[in-house]
Image (tube, rainbow, N blue to C red; front, top):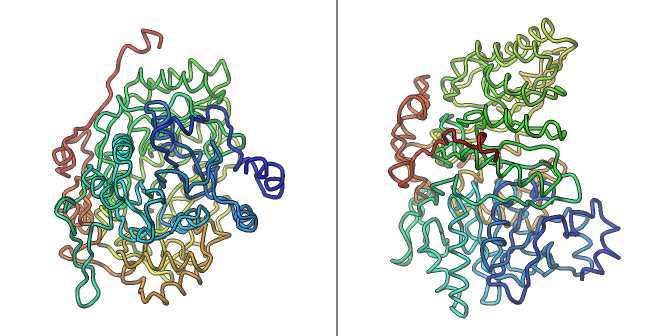
Length: 618
């Protein structure tokens, strides 16, 4: 198959490097002598999947630290899919070109609700039944993991098992379990898998609905299946595995650089932020650990940039000495340091100046809302004064391009808040014209608020498509010289909301939409909202039931059986504070907010401290 692909197929598709494998640092283990054979499947194109840090971690962990085998697979672009179907070529792994049906386990990384049709398409291309109930003994065990699994019900029908929370430890337990259960009937294996902390096996649970169609409960069918599935957490990030020899792609990918995961979790407590809630608590890596990882990656890859990643990198306690040391060590070699979007304060700008002394690219800040009133509602503890201080520091330092992130459709938002976005942008542009060395460019990206499970806003209604379109029209009514607005698609956000807060009835909708040809729904050129509307209608599912309807605190939610460690009372309290327009404090610096995570999951805030890394010359 490999020779036929390279000779006859790949010259006919765009970006053939997506499908060739053989990259620097890729690992091809002996198929026959390895333990469990697992495929790590990313339901998007190669250049997106190759940028995902979690996949890099699991790939290196399994292949370097166990006798098991882990290979990669990505969603083929429609041109490649068409040829594969025409030529009868099954979906295959990049390392050994094995058809994916030959693996013992297929694990999908679920990062975004709109990638689910790609999951079904990849299974179908791999000759594997898309519905878990149709799989038999010879088929791989299909598992999923990632942040989307915080509410697994809308796609539960497609997976044999789902991992809730951090994957590093539980994945090795799953692989060892499968190794020790060879020959065990599939249902018995899944029963044993369900007893691992952090593993949900949907077939072992029954969903009940009230007479009016509302979700009522989800109960285990077997006594050995836990009533609640507890999120898995890596307690010490500093001791956790991180790859020193990541795979280097043959082509440009979204984030084509060495990566340091400086910390996991975020203490900021933004009430709209799903990741900020479900990745609690904050855990950091130590300074010497990160410096050693940076050195190893640079020497093993040839990358000329190191990116510091986390949910809130500027809150990493050792960010300043880490950045200073990386810049000092690697600038003579032409190796730069990259930071993600910055906090809205002068410290962030000063640090950005440190890493970009050679050239000033675009600086990104995220005020999220246009007025202080609304920023207090969402608990974005940023003032206009702090924003303007950061802006002035940036322009005075030579920056000429700023990007600002906002959201529209937030709870308690009114048109004065939308006016506030425009007023803020005009003020920023004015300061730039006064201080910058040349003409400045201001770009504002406006996302649509989507309520997510396990957040204080999980009970709030989402704006309808019509409401969001009217807000877009309102914000676009003025021509603003030197200011460019870009908007997230309202229909995409509506569908994202339907899946994010859906129950198991949404699975038939996803299945029907895929049958109608939906795939790559996160890509605007392939998103087909009319097909989704048809699927919803044919399945008798009203999306407004999940999207635009507010939910009472006493109503059962499809994800209540998932134990993230956060107390429901904490989420209610935060939502009530939002309703009163009151912010809450940062638990790392101003005392515990009693969210419940640390005692519930038996893990504590792990804050890295200074060490002797610099003195020892690591």
